[in-house]
Length: 458
Image (cartoon, rainbow, N blue to C red; front, side, top):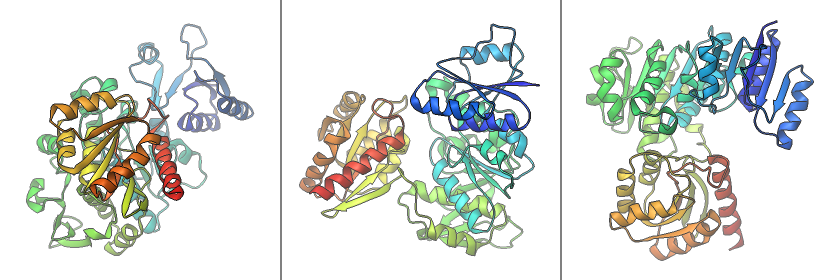
């Protein structure tokens, strides 16, 4: 019996283990953690004849070596144990690659990008599902890809949000439609250089049958013609900004499709842009890319309109929490880098901004300049608070306070919003959450709880 070792007892690791066990493999999972929750998972999986080793790491020094190693997305691809496994000739792949091997007969739409991929993935899945397709979302959104492979009924389409971590640990992902939303510096502590980060993401597009690329992203536009001359480009600025005038664009408040798509003779109006009830130019671009994927899959305009009109938005992405004294409290906790936070702030008028957390590497210049123009005041939280205060001082912005925690920020933001007649309080951190929270969702949930509790009490 072939032996597989899974690194990581998270959602993707468990589904990968179950899939391999179903296929007749001897399966072992290791994880360094030993919490009560993990002990419960251990008991459950042991009953399924899957061995779980907690407080343990993979050891390749003995003679009983695995034939296959599957890693969860959070495990660095250049960790010493994975470098060693590859040098030893042990097949080492990610969970997404494992799922692909069992699901490649089904057409996939795979979405990658630094920002915007989660919203775009959710919009595409909503359109395909409204069209009557069994089209689950998976990867970084929805369920793990291997969970789909475990299902008895196979889907019509699979909509996958794919991070650079998942692409890096895959060799054969080749979706029917590949979508690249944006490209800006991120995850460089893991990928080391911007070039390496770009090449990892480019691999997915190069292996896609059809490609949709954001033509408003300066980096993608600059290198695009040499990489994807046959791609379908998108632009919120109009048709003149499409490479080869091929793709989807916005003009006069309409999403338009160029004449060389689906054998139409003239450019076609698809839906009004106001159909999407999400603020910001970046969401207009997300709408364009979602419509592009749907039209390339042959979905009609009426279905697209219905899906977009009913789309409720996503938690932690410019999510409206409550309104108090005509002041909107907005949760944009997903904005974990400077570019995402800049887009979030640019989408809200007259805001009191709450920012900070665990700082990421990147160019903060444009974000700071947007704060100067659009933020009436800034409240700084987390480990980055002192650094961000320095950045603001350097450009002469003085209307900031270091409050350290969200619990301190909520009542103070309301006071400042009344003082400056602000229209909104916006949590858009420009940082990871790991200094105070396990993930951005937990941070956003805490913001929501505090806002509702505070506004209710007042």
